[in-house]
Length: 369
Image (cartoon, rainbow, N blue to C red):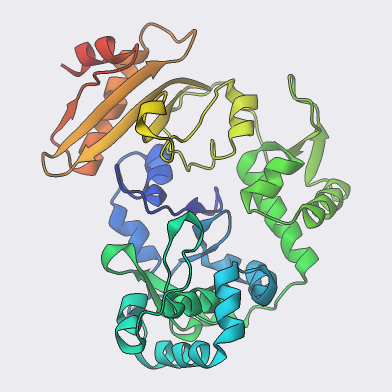
């Protein structure tokens, strides 16, 4: 987690929750409970990870907390409209919710709504219908006045106070200036990406454009970022001073749609000549490759893509479509079959059901058998 900086959270659970997948891609089979436990305080240890709005909703190392205080302090202007509106129009409710979390936390929005009533304004973006209680909680979370203590039923956030959940040393750490914090975040993005454009660095933590440009200038002067030219790229690129070029790459990994390696689609195209679109929100009849498609990385190329679903009732990993990239080697199906078997075992599935669609479906089915 320190190496890649963060993992994105997403509610889609057709395969498994998005934040578990990047670690599987890098580590292979691991116990997903480890990631959950690292976000929680126990009687013997403080959490090492926390949740906050970074790239999107994300899990990141808890020592990064001071680097996000500038965003927390700007909640009244930078948070989403529904959060800002409830803080402006119903400060009494926000204060009441703050006290309730302090008295009863960890607590979910549903538990507080049972007490205060579910007052719903107009639907928020992405179709969320948040009550005013939920908006108040999210405003307090954005502002850093409350934090998350894992997830409850239905993947709901459980809210608690920073004093009960965050290590005292983190809370006592000095707050850097906004410029210093953004510079540190851009440096972390550069270390995670290796080589990147200014827009890539900005997107990693969804930072303001002007702040990112100033941070890149400072980091170049300090020689932490080195200006370089990348063949085929039209934009200026920057190589992190810690980056190394391996003699060979022997990677083999299924990559989540929200994996930091591919979540910036423009960079994915520049690096791998791979056009990638998440088609969850595309009507079924208009999808090209499938609902939840994972690129397949082998060595230093994206050589295939598969539309996957975990049928938990049947304990089966469904390969709903499989496609090879132009120029992929003939043995890609054999390699992909092995990776799918590994994923199935990790998910607790007993079998992999071959694809019915895609130019790789037939060869993949042979190797799965």
